[in-house]
Structure formats: structure tokens, C-alpha cells
Amino acid sequence: MISDFFFPQPGGVESHIYQLSTKLIDRGHKVIIITHAYSGRTGVRYLTNGLKVYHVPFFVIYRETTFPTVFSFFPIFRNIIIREQIEIVHGHASLSSLCHEAILHARTMGLRTVFTDHSLFGFADVASILTNKLLKFTLSDVDHVICVSHTCKENTVLRASLDPLMVSVIPNAVVAENFRPLGYPNVYQDSSVTSPIDVRPPPPQHLGPHDTITIVVISRLFYNKGTDLLIAAIPRILASHPNVRFIIAGSGPKAIDLEQMLERNVLQDRVELLGPVRHEEVRDVMVRGHIYLHPSLTEAFGTVIVEAASCGLYVVCTRVGGIPEVLPNHMTEFAKPEEDDIVLATGRAIAALRANKIRTERFHELVRSMYSWTDVAERTERVYDGISGVLSEEEFYGYHAPGGWSATRGRAGVQSFALIDRLKRYYGCGIWAGKLFCLCVIIDYLLFVFLEIWSPRANIDIARNWPKKVTAPAVEKLTFETEVPIRKRSNRQREKNWES
Image (tube, rainbow, N blue to C red; front, side, top):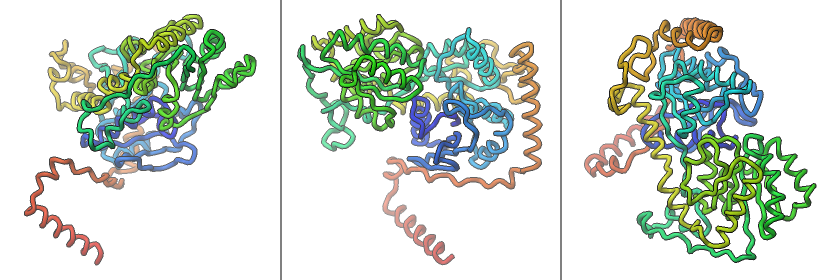
């Protein structure tokens, strides 16, 4: 797994990479993560479950994105790949420079590659045009693409001119046990509860006409997250509903504008600003509220609204991007990305809660049944099997793909490693861009040949793998007869190690 965005920075992409990696490790795979160095984190770190993270020291330019150099990352990337005996490189996020460079280098080294897109982009502004051209360069030579929603898939297919057959939709998920409502039994620690069917949600909370309703907002305070809409809507919502207060957590360049609005309207006693919070603290903030407000202007999925619903909050969100695909209608109140409509939608949500029309205490079990990282890992594993040849074309795609085997792609959806075929694919990216992309690939290939001669693979030490867990069925198969020799053998080995 490779991306510029990973812990300790909080966020949806960061959480996605970590949760997916740990579940793949549980399924018997070896997973490492490559990201750039953060303040106080450089070198190799081990996380839970033996997950190894390489923090590569590279210059960061904007929003934790490294400076794109194209080729300077290749030597250390090749060293890590050979040391860890990697077979598949999985990049995340369109704005990650490390991700794009790693996919290019991995294809040059003859490795299978997968790309996951977590964002939506436009087609008209300069930044989107440049990003889309970069994405087209990377995805011209990738084996498979994963998107977190169907809207994200449509956006990515159009931006990178992809065959929809080679794009899968695998949504994000949440760890439901980490986002339990107040009063909900902890079924993972209570041994008396044998199955989720035995769990009964807490009794419904009835709100009176004068009870205080708390609206929670947890978001990065950036323009695309709708912070300007939030700033404009808060005074109007509080003026219309005297028994309503806000809790806002997050940081970003719009935090100053938010503080100025509170000063201007004298709302400090009704709006609590928490600043940045760690991901493990999100649940503690959410359970203090009744409504979660998400005024985003663009969103491919919106994991935070799933976390809010799992905590028993009624969600008010904008109908943009992939958000309408995330939760059922009875758990959400949708609004247009406009100030007036957000105020009206929030008013409807407040009225529905005061009338006790919404059974929010049932939301947790619904979210738990809909979203699971184990399911995401299984579906991602199927993608790996498909591009590696473990699954046949009919098994992977569900039917025989039109065109079948071709000279440039090999099996449908799986790219050929031949340099001439790669150049053909890059050459079709544009009149001028195609020639530039081909030049980059040729230089990358020559650099790879030079590295193979200058630093032979035989001189690179192979890293020892983290010991795998012994599964329950394997433990049950051990009998007393097989257990004793194993114990004796391990004791003799310890004696030999001690003598040496």
C-alpha cells in the first residue's frame, strides 16, 4: 500500500489504508505501507498486527503531499520492494505523488498494480485538468482500478478515459464496535452475549419541546468541505431554534472565518469549537449530539456520516457526489449545497427528532450489518486474484469480456508488461502529453536497468516476515502426540540458541 496520506495524519484515506491492510493481514497476506515522513516519524515503524510502515523522508509541499520528482523515488522504492518481496503495489488517492510514481516504477519492475480513487474532481478548472491528465498517465498502465462509490467510478472513468470493465466499486466501511451509541452494550467484551442477535439497543430517547438538541460537525475546515456554507447557516439555525447548540471539531484554513463569525454574532456560548481531534476521540464527540451536519460540496463517499449514524445520530447532509449511496433515506435528511436549503433541512431534522419520528437507537445495528472491513478485504482480495491470474476471465468479470486476449493488454483488464505495449498505451494520452509520457517511461526503464547493474538484487537483504497468527482450526488439529515433539523441539532449539 502506498500513499502520501497515512497516520499520524487523520482522515478517511488514512483510515481506509490502515483498516484494509490489517484485515488483509488477518486473511494471511503480507502487507507493508509506504508513505512520506511526518514530524517525529522517519524510517520504519511497526503498527498493530505486525503492519510495517516505511516513512520515506521526502519534501512535503502542500496538504501533506510530497514534491513530485518522478524518478528520485525509484532507488529506495526498488530497494523496499525487493527487500519485502512484494508482488502487488496498491496506490491510493489521486493527489498523492508517491502513489503515481510508485505505480510507474512498479510497472517498470514487472509488478501488478491497483489504484483506489477516493475523490471526485471537475473537468473545467485548471487544477482539475492537470490532475486528470496526470491520472490518465498513471491509469494508462494499471491492472485494475477501485472506486469507493458508483459516482466516483463514473467520474474516474470519464477523467482517465478508462474501460468501465476494469473499474470495481468497493465502498469504505467502519469498525462498528468503535462507534457505539451511549448505553449500547459492548458485545465484544461481555461474554454473556453470544451473538449479535442477543443484543438489544438502548431504549429510545424522547426529546421534549424544550430539550436541548446538539448538532455535531466533525470535518476538515476547507472550502470543499462546505465550511463557508456552515459559517453562513449556523447563525440562522440558532436564531430559529433557541434550544439548539453546535459542537464543531476540526482544523483548517477556514477556522479563522468560523471564529470571526462567532465573534461577530456573539455565539460563543452556543457553539463549542474543539479544534483537531484524533480519530479514536471522534466517537466521544459524536455521542454528545443528536444530529450530524455534513455540508460538503463534493464527496466521493463520506465515511464520517456512516460513523455518525453508527453512533446514533440523525444525519443532515448535502446531496452531492456519492453521499446519496451511503445511507438509507430514513437515516438522512438531504439538502442542496445551498445555504437556504441547509437551514431548512436542519429545521426538518430538528422537528422530526422533537416529534420522536426517528428511531436513531436502531441505526447502529443497521450500519453494522451494512459495512464491514472484512467484506471490503474479501472483495479487494478478489481483485488481487483477478489481476494475478488466480481467477479466470469468466470468474473475475462474470462473463467473457469482448475482445478477449489482445496484443497490448493480454487478458482483458490486465496490462502487458512489454515495453513496446506500454509505450503504445502512453502514446495515446495526447498529442504532446503522449510523447512526454513515453519519454518518462523510457527514462524510467533505463534507470531500472542501471539500478539492476549498479545495485544487484543479490546484495539486497531480504527482510524477515512478521510471524503469522495461528488460526483456531490449526490449533484444534494439534493433538497431545503432535504437541509434545513440537515442545521438545522448541526447547532444544532454545538451548542451541543459548549456547550460540
